[in-house]
Image (cartoon, rainbow, N blue to C red; front, side):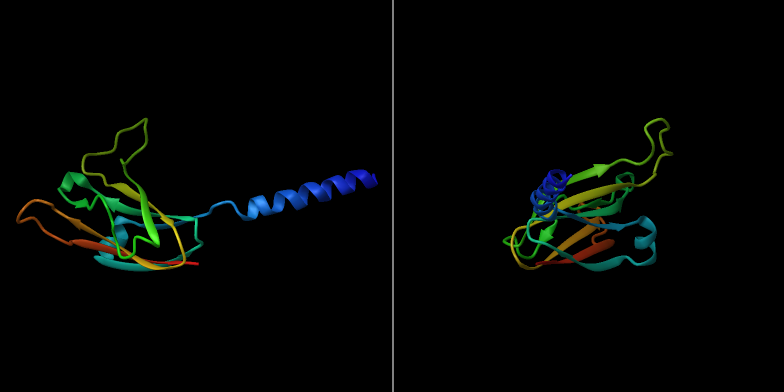
Length: 143
C-alpha cells in the first residue's frame, strides 16, 4: 500500500509539469451579426509566449468581399501568422443555400513578450471596389 502511494506521488510529480507547460490556444470569434451591428471591431487578448491565438471571422466570398490573406502584424518579432484558411458553410450532408457565409480562420503564435497589433480588412479587392467595409483589429499582449 505504501509503495503504491509513493508510485502515485512520483507519477503526479513528473506529469504535472508536462501538463502545465503544454501550449494553449486563445480563440477570438466574430460573427456576421457582430459585423452587421458594428463594422469596425477591436478586441484585446493576453497569451503566453509559445501559445497560439486563433481569429475566426465571418466571410462570404460569394459577395465579392474578401479578408486579406495575410494579416497586418505591427511587430513580427512578437507575433507570427502560422495559418489561414476558409471554412465553407453548412453540414457535409446538406449543402447550404447560395450566399451562406462561412468563416476565415487565422492562427498566430506568440514568439516573445510584448504587444503587437493584428489588423485585417474586408474589401472587394478590384480597382474601384469597396475598401475596408469591415475591419478587425486585435491587440495581442504576450506575457
